Image 1 (cartoon, rainbow, N blue to C red):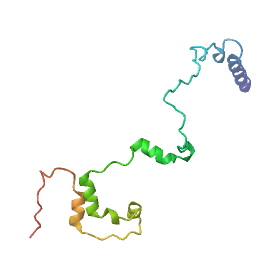
Image 2 (cartoon, helix red, strand yellow):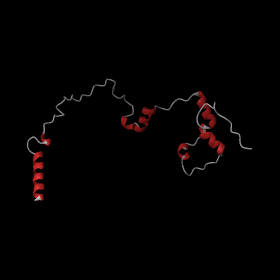
Image 3 (cartoon, rainbow, N blue to C red):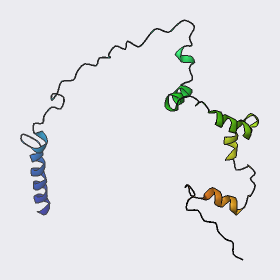
Image 4 (cartoon, helix red, strand yellow):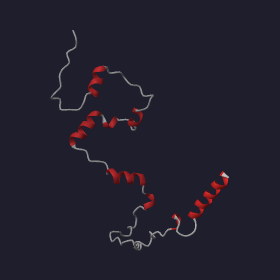
Length: 137
């Protein structure tokens, strides 16, 4: 008897979903009829000119280099002071790819001591609040 009542309740619940006036069959607005879509038109670009004879084609341009130059600009011009400092530091003798080999685990490093480590780890500032540490006697 219990099964019969349960089945009748289930059938009546399912019959309410179908047919006219159920929750799933209500009238909804058509989202595509709300506004008209303008046709896709590409505006003319009067800045485009045909390529000059003898110029490299777009297929020969390195896209990654062009993207880097577009994002960060080309190489920045160096000031006279910066060029002099780089030349004094040995710019001509610099190994090409030194930045890649510095982080290599096989790179040999020299322990400079705790003083150098403390100087490098010091917070940035103008030095007005700096105090000399007196070593214990």
